[in-house]
Image 1: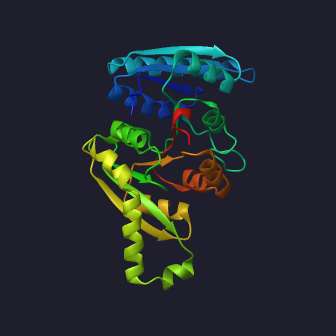
Image 2: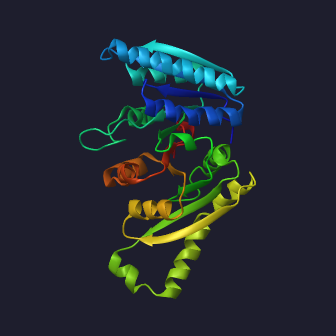
Length: 283
């Protein structure tokens, strides 16, 4: 796994985006990476929006520099997705950090958002952040990592976790989807067997985490609803952050169509990161 050497934080002048950019600062600090903070001025923004965006860039760059990070701010004009894509390709950006937008009239955070369009378009890795507790960003103590298949890009997933780790407790969660009836009928021995298989499937990620001296609690849960299982684990364990990976386009479509991401973003009381590796990692 190569390092994140160049990181781009995209902001829109809002509090949510500025708070999410703190994750970019945290990762840049841990990676000793160059950080660019960008605000794109589009035709629909008024003078107040533009002023808010400029001030947000200035605050973030100043804060990053105060933490010893090489940082620059950029104010650009044009369509957001095309402008950021051009900067990523021109400057060989390794990671883009963006925020979920404010929920719209249909209570959506991610579907059809600028962040989702960026994730579909960019060739580099990207994380989309929903910040629920702004003050917790630099003080993460518990991280929940729901994983469908542990071998998918385990190296980069573990690398990202290591940059957010800071001695946090890590739980890797695999949800075995079952109906409520079959869950009740499954014998104790069968559940033990399925848990053993689930833990084995998570070993590639556990092994990569061990390379960073990160111990992981591997937990296998049985539930009819994926989002519900993640939310219950997050709430019961008092986790500060959920890191969800989207590693294949058909996986992204299944997640979005089934809406577990939307449900988790809407209902969780902790921060959420949706992570996708760059095209170099696509299967």
